[in-house]
Image 1 (spheres, helix red, strand yellow):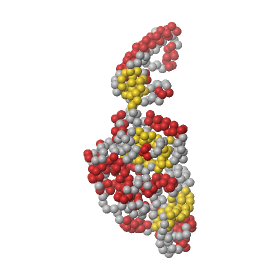
Image 2 (cartoon, one colour):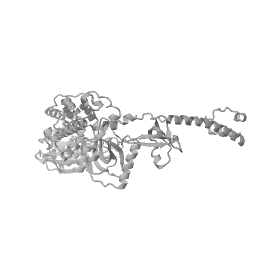
Image 3 (cartoon, rainbow, N blue to C red):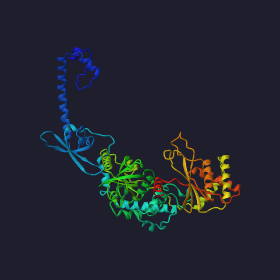
Image 4 (cartoon, rainbow, N blue to C red):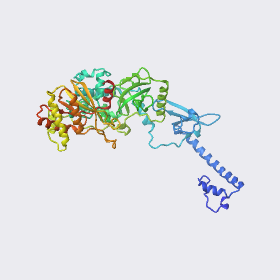
Length: 562
């Protein structure tokens, strides 16, 4: 009929989409009766096609265990189900309408809910590229069923963390037991271990010998060497406590080596800060991180699923939700914590509790709960990792390192300007008037922040210590290039000399040690002080030592306990 009216080629398939302008131009040539006849023919064809498609749709929905997507529910409860993925269980006999029973598995709680839905609310053609299969999500529950690590993994992790704290104790020179067997018996929540735990990642990959500390190397290297010396006996002994994880190998052969690979990523993949402990599931304890530590009620961040060591994390608190500070560590296909939890008393209102529950429910619904580390996301622990190369040779002698540092310090630098030499002479003359050196004194330079966001004004505090006690602090400022906020704000050699000169004017004694927290000024500052003290005839020039910037844990500990 249309072809007889319009001189154009029309597709004969009524299901083909036509351009809107084309349809309007065609229909303008038809009378109302002709238009009604055309629509009646098209609708009949559509009914036949829709009936065929409906039969195919229902036929697919009758396949038990087929994955489907829930859509187009309009009720308040139904809207929360839209987008959920389930599996067909069976067809429900209903006199009024044809419905299909769908199972919805909660991959965090492990519970299965069943809902009966019409065919129009189910999409049997669901397919999402890159979505994890249900078997992979079962790794959360299959690892352990009681919200804890395997017994063997928990024991090994506790020994590793205590080893690391013991090495930190030797570096810091604390009053903790010098023998590891006695140190291992300390209560895990003691203040001594809390202080050492805060310095753990300060020395994790930083060699303490660069700061003239007595040690055999970074804490990570010391722990790996210690594990390597007793690896066979340790893995065999721990493997008898519980079932083994596949990547541990036969008889737990790769267990200690796996932990060596985990530890290599902890300085980057660890998550430290303040959390709300919300609820406990069989697969782990749910923690909500606080994005802004100054707003504990409104800045709810990522949601984590965390497993405990010997006990469930959520059972450490008298009631939930509860506020705490801790550090999360990735091991295998899960997250655990460092064994130290600082509980803080924060009032929980009904509004906050509802907001936390809603935040967690949304994370579970959208499957955005973080339950493993970045390395596990990349599949690095699906197979046994390669054997790490461990140097078991004797540690470098401290006297050789000190000799090398002294040789380097005495080498003149051609990059030192005249103004810097002039400031160095002023420091030497002032030190000469101060008289004898106080061997128990030292000066430390500590920047107020190590990023532009933390320290946009270029603040540095000079701390005067005597016999381990802080006797005074002097705030100073250095130049910050505000056009480059991506750079780490720090002071130059000239500014370091100016800060040192001002500090000496405020202290009553000369000090044998100066410790700046900027590594690039250590060698030139030592060169200036050595040569200017010699030219001015001052005995006992200060020894310049690098002061490593503290980790986030150490900075938080110092803020809370001083």
